[in-house]
Image (cartoon, rainbow, N blue to C red; front, side, top):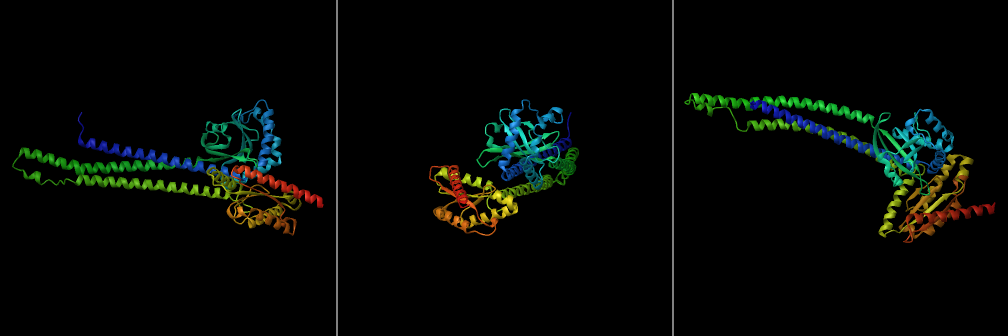
Length: 478
């Protein structure tokens, strides 16, 4: 069966238009989905880091020990997939009294504040049981259907690296389950002051809404591309009929007539055919297609701009996590990052630094006697004196009543004088109990052989020796 030139041309045009539409749709869909996934994974990681920086690691460690004591004493563990069954309820009842503990209540309140402030689905703390390759819930900030302490879930395949290196945390992963839908989850370790892992801070962010928007966007783009494909096909067929087939038919008729009446040879010479007309019209159609494509790409750029803005907001949240909200100095997270840089300097043999530890005395007594607001005043007062003395060095609030200073250059050379200046200013402070500076100070300098942690431990030891001397002196005077 022979096919006419028109049918072949129409078929080719339709195939090209459909192929272009399908490829564009698939490629753009994959790009958008990858950008969305990366953005949500980054945000989940940043929020989990914020949680880990803010959490009271000592409380978390105390609660973990209480949960694990019951967990290890329980012969038969009931997994969370048995939720709602009598066996599951009986298992969870073993841990129910822990929900009344001060650690649990305090940690849950903190988690809920973070959860509400960051507009995420859930923030929770878990610990890992390596022998059974599972994780156990400690505190869940969810307001409804919260996983109780002791609730057990198996590790996902994405998290099995934790079994080899617990310090890597829960790298961001995306799941789609019937009860929760699309979720992105990430978690980082929460370290105690001794550097041990107290627990893991995990964050769940729902992707249901963005997936629905993505589906709607894909549907709209598909309809638009289908309409454009139909319109372009109709225009192309009209152009072929008018600019290609019509001249060919004229030429064919003229040739046939010429064969019949050879004397009318002027008819071929006078046909209205220009050799470049068809190419120019085809190029014009392609320009229209290109214009439509650019409009579509522009919409993709706008989507990416929205995702970039979301990433920027996550970066701003991370910046807040590096700053202690009470005193304005660096946070524990900021100190940990500085330790990484110092460790690199030690590795290169360029390190020349010291660490100063300052620990406030009797802060708990001050809080109990006058209230936490007065305690906060005392913390800010102590921090102000530290920043005044060590004006050229970064100061970090390491814990509730501890501060760390990393000295270099000028402060490194004058460390003894600065330490003595701090003691003098502390002794000279007067006023109400919360207006006085009552703190022990100790320092250590890098000797070319120690690690950063070694220097930290030496400074911490000397600070505590000084604290003992101060308490001994106070008892003697009393």
